[in-house]
Length: 323
Image 1 (cartoon, rainbow, N blue to C red):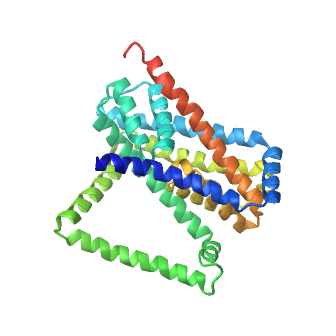
Image 2 (cartoon, one colour; image 1 turned 45 degrees about the vertical axis):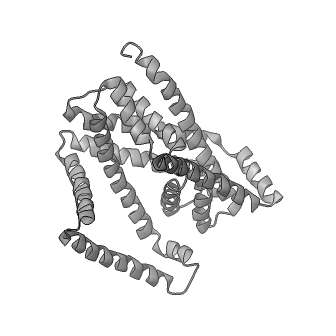
């Protein structure tokens, strides 16, 4: 029963938080602000939004194709259609229950392609390790490109804020090294579990470089994340106020938006606000910045709902004979 209540809490809380944030952000706007945002929505060039969705679709196709490189060495070669529909269903499920999409994806491919669930899920975990490395690389790029701007934002223009951020990064690095040495030498059962988990992650990364088509896998990993950034970038041209943002703003906005999605289901309520707060650092007014965030989030969410929903319906139909 406790487990059941925990699942309900972890499902409902992010949605409730997202709804609250939407209400709170809207309640802070004046009628003039709301009118300005509506005008931005009405005058936006949606051809750029359509191009953004095209890049999103390419990233999903690439992710499905990349998955094949993990499954083939295990002796399985699923139909590409089942791969792509399983991936899209995973995105749809993640909108409803955070982090449950990976289980849904492994379940779908197991049901329709007879790939054992454990093996399918293991390949997805290995994929996620590669994705985490890419995300961390982009975050590091954002900090190195925009250290002064981010530090002034984080510390509210406090004096010596850049130095504080540098010291903070160095301090975290030193603490990380100390913690690593303590974990490495500890015999505590809980610490040994952490050791086993980290060792498994390292093995997962190493397995990528040992696979037969490792360069194809690495190419698709980079391609997927390049498409994600392009999705964000091209939408900036939809509004005149955001059309001249520098590359640094694109990376910072992308990173902040991506991190916001971890707080609520699909960034519900958080994505537009976080992205707006990031691009206002570059001289964009609050109202068009919010409009940009909402256009970006709405387009992505509708794409997932449409293609994820269609995949959910088409999977059993496409595999009718096997079922």
